[in-house]
Image (cartoon, rainbow, N blue to C red; front, top):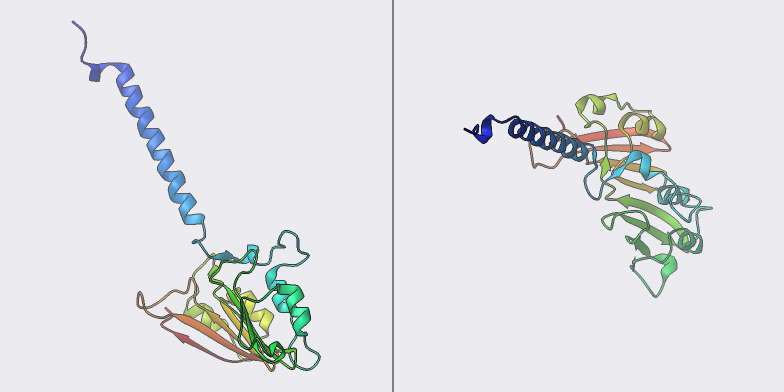
Length: 208
């Protein structure tokens, strides 16, 4: 009399093999997802990585735009960033605010805004970078920022900001991504103010 199939060796070997395959697949999927940045976010390493066909990254180009007296001209900025997506005053581009949001290598949610006065860059900002951080920012990180810290010291402590703006020597850095919050789904951010490359103030909302 033949043994029932569930008592045969080949049946249990098949069950064990299927179990191992399913377990291994689940592990790979879970860890791949955990290690992957959210769609539309940027790792700090890739943010400054050189882009194809360019000697410098978009962030490097943005940082190289000088403001005020002796600042970058409209023509020079256009050579760096290409044609603007939006111009506030087409009849007088030399005195207008221009927006770029079709930037090669960056998500469409990222926008660069530059205001020109007499054809020279006067203010600039970049928003929507959505940085993917290795660790969430907390109140402990916030408290590490002290008045008098330099821009580089802030970046060393907190990493790259999601939003950056500069005007007349004043810089504002705003951190919104991967900030540990006290209350879910509530506005959460860290804001750092600098003047002449020194921290002059800071504020936070809902940071844990």
